[in-house]
Image (cartoon, rainbow, N blue to C red; front, side):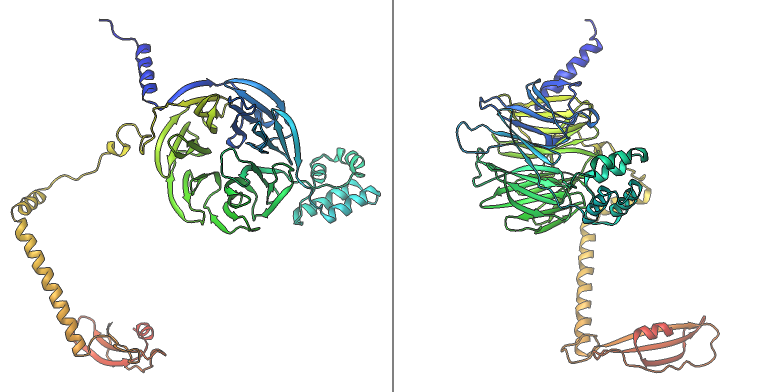
Length: 548
């Protein structure tokens, strides 16, 4: 019989891995040219035909060509350029009218672009902020030719370093120019009004009045101005505004806006703030020891990934429940929800190419990708309910489908024996004394145990007798009542070499609580056991020890 070739053995190993895996490889394109992160991925039935599409806010290679892409399977249906880098993409229902087609909201710069049926529907822009008064005065002086561009540059640099209100985009662009270009920039923009505009850093959705899956939802925006805004889904007016001590980068919400809701915001200052419906300020604060890289809510637990390569579980009141270390840095996180089995878990994409799935701190599954995964999205795609979409650092696109027979069990991610099993223990060699002692314990084990128990009972009996005798003769430093003073008796032996004269000391009372210390000082000559002087002195213990 001919020997099997290496290619046949590799193919058989690949087939065995595929058979033992819980996932089916539906599609992999290493040159799909998709560069994004988890917040800019969304799955939704955009046309109401039951065919779910993938919405991607693509940053472009190097973040220079942002686009909005909609994919059906591996095919790109539409692609439109964006004026600024996308911050988040979500789908939500705006109204109860039929047909119930979800809208797409894409946050980019200071605007939220809303699409219905993949057509532009509405554009919401963040309200402008009041400009810096000193900056406004400087541009007014430049408008009247009272100062030149060099003086304007020096004054604006001083304001940027010291002022609490940041400069406008116009002033920041002016400070980035070369000296030869500044005069033309001033002549072009000095007649324009100063505007200060913030940008959106994160976005999510909050159910308005019902907890149903197809209920109307509000948009929740986090801004660079350390604020959270809740928008009305129909009129796009600001329903609520909340302030934060830091700039929010990740948001997680639960509940309904009209009833009761909780909002968790992970900020750049390394803290997570919890807000409720009637609070304009955070109610609870979770202080992290490192910067957060992801925030996912699993039932009532907030799972946070940090730059310390670990996952942490917290309650909504800030109590730490558990911590799980990761073998590599965490690049992205998202929620895996298998509704047919009622399972919610956390997916974490690591820098070593692994995607780890955890339920609380139990590892359920490990997926190994050919490149580091930068974004994750799980849900219905096409007509498959449980589909995992991943994009890689090099711009690749991976689509996996969870098998209908797959069941996640704790410890399912570990294949084979644990690594600690292969570690050799440094056990010392058995000596003759050890062997003899072992044989003696085997032969006389019962007698040794009885002897130990007898000695233990005798020790307890003697301790009890000594305690009773001390109580009867009042020798014990135990005060029966609060009014009686507690007397402490300490013996301090002093070893003084070559001492030929007696030691005399004066007394002081110890404390204001009626506790007096009697210290017996024994002065010994070096090499002798009989004391030269034995004196009882009343003085504080600290002074007695210092004198010693």
